[in-house]
Image 1: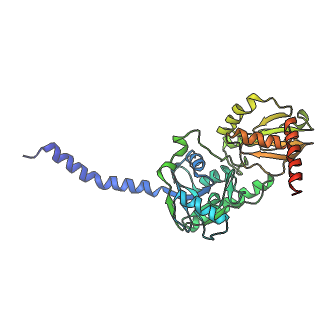
Image 2 (image 1 turned 135 degrees about the vertical axis):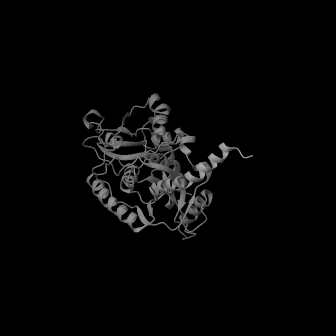
Image 3 (image 1 turned 90 degrees about the vertical axis):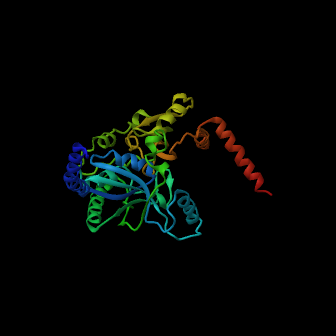
Length: 336
């Protein structure tokens, strides 16, 4: 004999099933996705996941003409640099899925523009290559229209803050493949992992992003309080692991005669001049007479490399003697 309770449960499930399917479909109808290239996808995934209304971010590869795998892409970029191939490489991207009931494509793109530097061409910070290009790959004409509109608005804000032209590629999505499992949620699994993203600090007109607003309005250092003859300035960023490491490795043990100061501002000390915009943090800039004469971009924990740069600027007496010996050696070698 059949159990009456099981029969009633089965009937209830049959009655509810169409409603559950309809509810699931309704939820899916509210979801939209777009493919964005912001340099290394580790940092891009972290930044875009934090946006309100974003329900999923997946690291991947898009719009290339080769096999979509991390090793193949790095190898192919090396061949491109050597001029051995003209095949288009993939872009490191994130597939951002968001809920239209909680946010909009325009808001997602505002987060995209503000969370990386779209003026750098085939690079993002220390990551150089066409695979790191800034990109928006769209699913339809409506997405393309919104991407172009937000780009043009942000371009004016960048120009007003003395940044260059946006180089972001905006194009229809031709192909996409998810990245390897170990790349997914990388900075969640490796919180001290490298993340080169920091944005320009320029607020999208009308945006209420308080975190960016705080960073972009940090006052520059006062030039009159620094050494006008020779001064080092460390340009840092909030939530920057390598900035903290530079402080622990270098700043906390500073004994050099040349003075060094740190700032969260992306602008040079008041009245001083940078040669070009900053592309990574921390960046250490040497100023003489208020003008940049050299920089060390993106400390990554290699102390020897930093001190080699430091000595190359003859900021220690022994560096000057070493440089003199090197010049003498070159002169002698040139006689043979």
